[in-house]
Image (cartoon, rainbow, N blue to C red; front, side, top):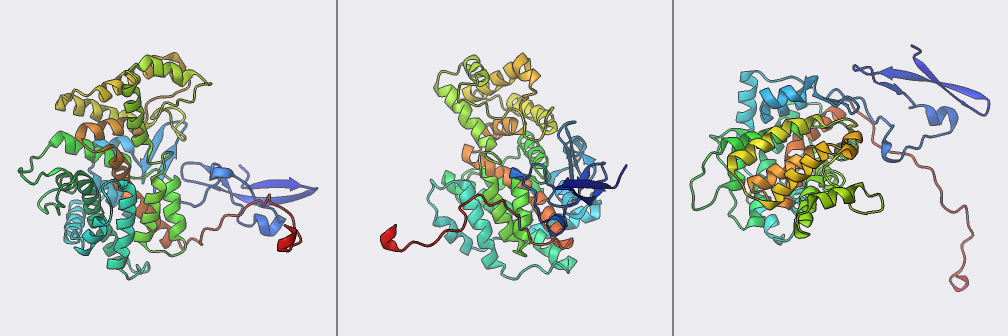
Amino acid sequence: MSNTATIEFEGKKYDFPVIQGSEDELAIDIKTLRGTTGMVTIDPGYKNTGSCESAITFLDGEKGILRYRGYAIEDLAEKADFLEVAYLLIFGELPNSEQLSKFHTDIKAESHVDEEMKKILDGFPKSAHPMGVLSSLTSALVAFNPSSVDVSSEEAMYNSIVRILAKFPVLVAWTMRKKMGLPLDYGDDSLGYVENIHKMMFKRPNKEYAKDTIAIDALDKLLILHADHEQNCSTSTVRIVGSSHAGLFASLSAGISALWGPLHGGANQAVLEMLQAIQDDGGDTKKYMAKAKDKEDPFRLMGFGHRVYKNFDPRARIIKKSADQVLGALGIEDPILEIAKGLEKEALEDQYFVDRKLYPNVDFYSGIIYRALGIPVDMFTVMFALGRLPGWIAQWREMRLRKEPIGRPRQIYIGENHRDFPSLEKR
């Protein structure tokens, strides 16, 4: 195989190196393109542009493969817990028992959130969207931890990572409890990481906390499945903000804002809003499947298909089992969830959807589980952010350790050419 690619333009040829990834992905290295040729590339949405080299996550959309640090998502979801996966993503290897115990102990030691943060939370009305609240609270952490991370120090980097892994779940729980009118809870250091999250979110002030193993296991799997997904919109945002040497908390806050959009993390909320709309219109799933197939109809079926996975979403296969277990164990009778099951059945059997590989994706099933667990619809994207936290941290850490340059995309200008400035009376 040639290790160069040639661009020919106006009779001149220019050679550029071709680099090969560990999974045999090929890329043309065009770092010198503008300096050599005077040209830039244009790639709206960066669909064909690699912004970095990364050793964290491998994704093959055509084959339906997702791996964290080489480990198949199927194995991690079955055999690991979320804290193990977080350690793996951030530090590159699965922790041994001593490392995992220390990691959890260090996180618990940093789990206190300054009481002054409650004043910031109090400033938001209950009607505020939880993602806006979470982004603001995460950014506000900078005020209480003002020193920037010394990325040349492994200890300083580790301490900053542990700090945000400890405090972020508290902010998530506070955001939800504020919306639901519940007193704020700090959790319990005697519990596991995900179990503690569950308690902080759901403990009622007048009741003893009862451990719900099925709910906690489903939540653990959901967090693992969302933990990283290569260079998506929010991850790219974290890296490009961090490339300016902005701190970890500020970079994460920017990632939360990017995740908020309905085309990204907001997709699972959009699924439930769609299901509610179908319910409000009588609950006829066949009618809406027909609308989805009608190119003239503006209705779009949310939670089916994926921008990257052209065959199936491997995460959806895993979480479908959890969805079935949760719904079966809790015995919930909910017309919205019945509509979801109806849409799933029809999509898996309808040749139109089968031929186009429009299978239910992870957003479809995660929305169903979150609703069954009693999480408000506009908290769904917050739960996505909680899962994606270790991936964002890992990507930020990798970018800083690799000393990547500040992000600065080019453009092709299509505006007016030079114009003479007219005086005010001539306009």
